[in-house]
Length: 272
Image 1 (cartoon, one colour):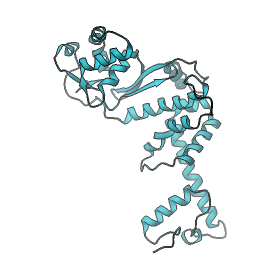
Image 2: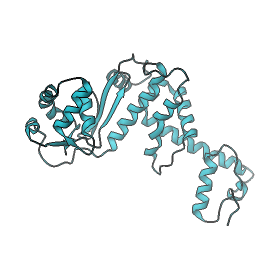
Image 3: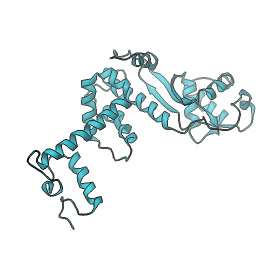
Image 4: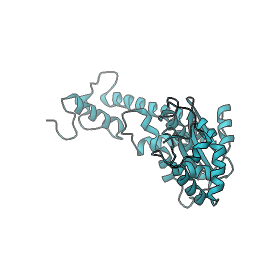
């Protein structure tokens, strides 16, 4: 058995030691035992090359997944955000997809003290990260593309006990800005200016394998939230949406009759 802090003789122990060595800030115990040095590079220098390459790959992955945040912050500030996140919250997911899962929470937790209002400029990085992450999750979620059966019809609302659900490829957000101009600017390339405060309910959804971001009225957002991924009675969800948005239940149901086929086409709902 290896001494505490030293690499073991089996592959799993050696892999765990190597991961700890790469993520650590100081040379670990047993360095010269596990890594061979020569006249060109010492064991510490060889480990540094691995560590730098590993972190560079993680930074590249974050840059690819968070284009809106990168456009807002600029390359240098984004690298500071990403480096701090990688150091503070090392990923435990075997897939690189899991790397950015907590980025928005990290940015929210590290906002300047005393500047925590939803309309504050410091709120934007976390909001942008939520939008970017939601787009990535919607791309990988189980969507509606392969579901059998006809498109949802408006007369479904007249069926007693009819149920619908929100597909796994849908993410609901409450953003502090209008995402439409931001996404258009990011698609054009280059840096973007901070958008003005504009609280906006948003649904990120995938339809026909394409992810889109939809700004929604409050009642539609509340209705989709009430459906949940497990599904709910359409009328019960309408009642909850009416209460949340300050509207009459009948008015919400009437509007749903017009919007339901559109929502199905956008990949926002599926049969429950």
